[in-house]
Length: 405
Image (cartoon, helix red, strand yellow):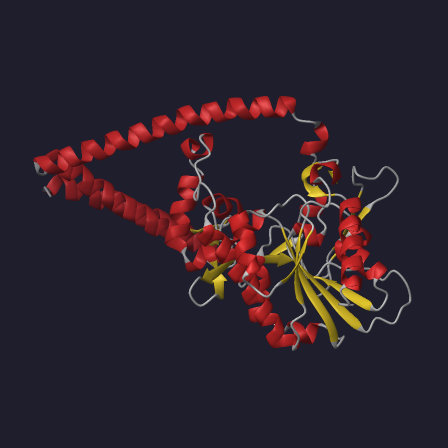
């Protein structure tokens, strides 16, 4: 590198060092001395600035007096960069046009702000996130004209199941699953655990479901928590509520990785052990998926992987549920772990075949009713209270007929 380049580089570098040194001293004497100013890490910012400066000076020198092949390579890379950015800009504008059309056609109820979703979740190193312990929220739900929806969480991040009477409840019923089990959008007295407990007078129901969960969280919690200590009753059963969305959540699909920002348990498919959170345990893969998944090109054409579900995907879901059952048996000493197929989630022939090869006790309610007839007025994705009550009425009757209560 010629002397004049070193001279310019040295001058700019010295100016940067002086400026950032002044900022660090200013923060030390007038701030709290932690090196942060308005939420910015001054030391990291200084390091990155110097790094970028060094890279730019080396690049300028190579382009000006470096080998011809370096200049050609840079030209190719720069051309690709400009092309990609242009494509992203074009499809970004097309997406905005589509979004405007959707907003124009959407019902006001479908775009309602959900206050019960705010501040309800906290980060978790095992599950990705969990319900905020000892949390409660009351809000005027559009579902009710004269009442309020109550959402309550206990100290163990379980949704509360209010007691429907003064009964001797000497058995437990553990409900696992996603927002369908949790009861997203309905009150504490309208969830599946509540309706079951109302029917089965000697059972205390515990709600371990939560929003955006899958079999992965059930398995992870059973592998890393002593659930037995959380349940005072000696005998009972556990039940997992399945919907077809759990396939993408367990695989996981690229769409789900992006949507959840990788905040779900990382699963070793060989050992079926969960270990940490996907976004951190597989950070390189996660960064690539997240970058591509957020590109305008991928979003416009809805490019996802896998494009369709295959036998290996169904097998993984079944293996995860079966492994969760084994963990339950290990902790509770009985094999009373059941599977409910919720209405609106018809099983494929391959999924049925794979489930048939297990010893899971299955209650298939996929055709009990049309789910679209029983969804919340402000949310097409989740069932209303009547749907949960219908499913639990049927489940309770089937349990009685089969002498499982």
